[in-house]
Image 1: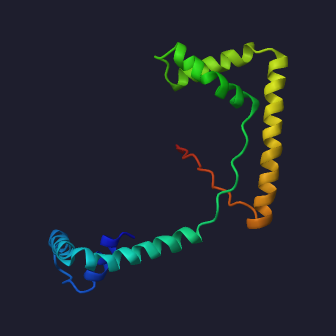
Image 2: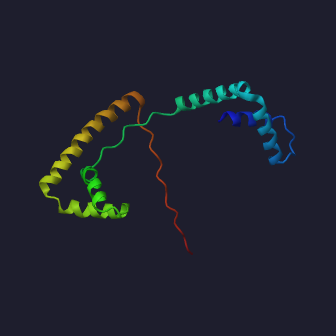
Length: 151
């Protein structure tokens, strides 16, 4: 919570219940302006303390998954495509990369696959170290698609 939100919370306990929100906001705003920097420090310190406690309670982020051979290829070629075709949008760049990937020789694809395999080894080691220290990473729930049912 912000320092101002903490003041709002504190003052809402003592305000009349039937008071319109606009009046409540005006009262709190005037109080905030009147307490000055010294008075605000109390709320700012509490807000900082709450933020630190919240941040400390968050699980650390696991290592990011490695890029595939195609994604490494895309990273290498994207800037050139954008420079040669400044009017391209993201979809156009993706299509062009797909066309270029299909035209790449098997030897070049193998080179990109080797880079991806090396990145995978680094990732696997980092993930093992993460699991050893923090346990299994929390899996994000997949969003389910809403399906229309007609009867």
